[in-house]
Length: 322
Image (cartoon, rainbow, N blue to C red; front, side):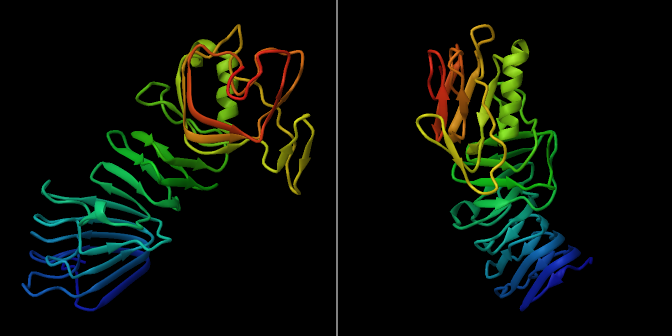
């Protein structure tokens, strides 16, 4: 659509693919160049939407800021044509929003979305050019690739869940100060450096790094790790002070924890707990020394809590480190 979608009423996009390019003075979807306020409502709840504004207009919205714009779902790309924000108007996502939004501006004095940092109750992944931010708490519903040279940050207080069957591919940089949870499987994210630590979003990945620290210590013992989600090694289990336990209906087979690092292969890296909690750790062998989440450490372990776990060993027994 070469002349965009210009309106003073309401448009709802709930699926399919829409590509709209504004004429010289028109938004891709929204208002034109008339000096009077643009009173329109734009709702995008699903589908794939690509909107590019004409000269000096927004991709979505308009020259004036009377456009009411709700983007609660779908994959949306908005590009401004010049001296406008890419999405210009009164923007919201709704409390249950989970859209993936890409914005591009031609003039760096303008933003991807008008007043985005001042808005509350935003739930979306929003990219401004190559920099992405997770707002609110939401599941990823579409496959997401972070290309080389791009970045995604999950700030403190925000959370992103990757359910089974949905993929996230990291070729760029991912920073997790909030919560990243990946439902199943071993995840390989990060490079093990201080700037790009190995990320641990689930139990399978924690167990995988435990094995590597203990059995390939030269390669993994001195690396940097960052917990990105609360992890329960034995969901449905409750342990008492004697190591006995009861299970809820549907609980799986008991997983016995092996402490990370020992006197032969100590942990000498950095483990950043990121304010998260590990629970369900179980170790019960009174012939073993140095027992805990970590067995023997010469490194740094910080900002982590251990709850609802049981450890029993010979000596040097602790929750976080023996």
